Each structure stands twice: as C-alpha cells, then as structure tokens.
Figure: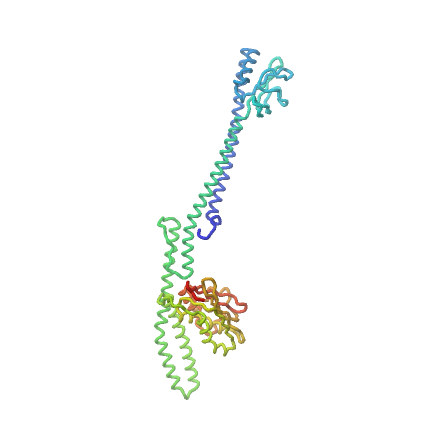
Length: 457
C-alpha cells in the first residue's frame, strides 16, 4: 500500500466489517451465555435451599424443636457455611437463633423472599430465602447468599470482555495483514497499468506462481496486453512501411510535376494546377517524413544524447525562425527565457518547439500575442508556449497527441495531425512531462524537461 493509508483500503474495510459482525455475534452469544449461567446458578441455589429445608424438616420430625435448634446453632455458627442464612423467630418475629440479625420486613409467612443482610464480617450481601410457619407460631427462614454467584458472574463477565477485546484485536490485525497482502498484489497490477498507460506496452504484470485468482487475472491481462502490443506493432509497421515505401514514388511524381510546370510556360492556368499538385505532394512528403521520424523515436532508433542544450538559446532561435511569418500575420512573439541547460537532442527539441510555435501561429488571430517562456521549476525546466487562439476542447486534450487525430473544428485547416504526436514522442524520449492548459484565452502547452544535476543557471 505504497503512499496510501491502510485503513482507507477497501479490503481492510471489508475485513473490518466481518470482524465487527463476528464480534457483535460473539457479544450476543456471550451475553446469552452469561444470562444462562446466572439463571443456572440461581436454580442451583434454589435447589440447595430446598435440600436444606428437607434436611431441617427431617430433623424437626425426628428430634423435635431441641434438635432443630441444635442444628441451626451449629450451621449458623463460625464453622458453618458462610453462604447459608438461617433464622428461627417466635410468633412476634423476634430472633431466637440464626445468623440473620432480624426478620426481613418484606418476608411473607410462607414463601420466597429476597433481602439484603450483613455477613459475619459486616459486609452487605443479597440473600434468597424460603420462610415457613412451624407449629406453635414459630417462624423459620432458610436461605443462601449470592456472593458466590456474583463472583462467578463477575469472573465470567471479565472473561467475556477480555475475549471480545482479544477477538477484536486479532480481527483488526488479521484484517490489516490481509489488506496489506492483497493491496501489494493490487499495487503491483496498478503500477504495471500506469506504466502501460504511459506508453510502455512491453510492461507485464508480475506473477507469484501461486495459481490464485490474482495470478489468473494477471495471466489473462498479460495475454490481453501481448495481443494489444502485437496489434499495435502491426498497425505501426504497416503505417511506417507504407510511409517509407510511398516516399520514393511520391518524390518522383513531384519531380515530374516540377518538370511539367517548367514546360508549361505558355499556359499559366496549367502551371497553377501543377504548382497546386506540387504543394499537395510536398504536404504528403512532410507527413511521411514526420511519421517516419515518430516511428524512429518510438522504436528506439533515436537515443537521448547526454549533450547539454542551452534551452534559452533554443527558444530564441525558434522565435527568430518564425519571426517573419509572425510579422506577416501581425502576431507578436514574446520571449522570456531564463538561462538554463538540460541534456538532450537539440535538433529534436528544436523540432518539437517549432511544431508548438507553428500550431500557435496557425490558430492565433491578427493582433494576438504568443508567449514563449522558460523558467526553472524544481528539478525541471518549464517551457511554455501560450497563444490567444480558440484553444482545445478539454474533451479532446487526451487525444490530440495521437497520430492523425484532428478535432472537427480543425479539419479545414492545413496539417496532417502529426505535429503534436511528434512533440509527444520527443517529450517521452527526454522523459519530459507534457500538459495542455487553459491560457484564458487560448491554449498553453507546458513541457517540463528534467535538468541535469550540475545545471548552470
């Protein structure tokens, strides 16, 4: 997850949702378990009370009141069960024997009652008891405290909380690890896709050899990319071969037209037609030359040299080349260039800059201005060519660098649609970034050319 927040990862969020559902389900299950354990302990306490009552009843039948008093004294004494509660009271509810200080005010004569009392240490406790009326008006209370049940419930509750916290922690860690593992695979695909998008059709998505879904997806994408690359190379080969093969016949046709025009001195109209045909032939030859030059650059036949290019001089030379044409069209070319140098091919950079100026002049109205600027921007030289023409529709800006692409509003103007394609090829050769921006009005073309580490500015 390079450069990205892991918690914003969709795989992590999906894993976290499953963890939350699991923890919620576990919380419901543990709450139900706590309730059932508490209910079971209460039932068990009631059964213990009933068993003691049965024992005391047997003592009453066998040994009478004296035997019952002796048993109650023993069980409620220091050696008795601290959880047990006993009280034998007279008809006026005055205590006679037991470990309960007073008869509970809310206790019925015969039935179950829950009340608060204090143990031998003075600590409060909750007691559940059963009351009886014995012959002679005596009243008997037999019960048990709930401190043992409370301790078990507290322990179970604490264990449940710890289990939920542990489950949540393990789930979050597992989700983070899963998201990180999946994100690495997705990042590898995304990185390859960006390089392919930037023009490297030879790039392939790496495989791990695991045979999982990602590997199968990567294999299918790689097969698709290989097919696309083969088709693109085929199209380029056909176009390049056609441009190469057509140059010689077209050059011979042009030369014959020149000879024909020279032989038509007495026929001005025929001469004009021959001149128009020659101009069309020149346009086609220029198109083929541009196409072949783009093919050589994209095919790797042209290498980026490491010779230093004086960029400010390059801009002034380009402006001087188009000065006469700009004056004829009443367009001003303003140059603002800092002294910067960068490694590159001067001829190719000049050709790219000339194409940009040519486009700017083609679309600039009379009285307009073309700004040609050079400035340092971080580790790059920022070259701008801004005109005051109609600009380019944002919907077409991604396609204007394609070969032969021409928007509908430019089909009536001279050109082959290869000027910006050549600029893009030169920019890619120099690892430069190329962008189109609004000049308001007009179009601004920005070329960011990497500078050398030891640039003299």
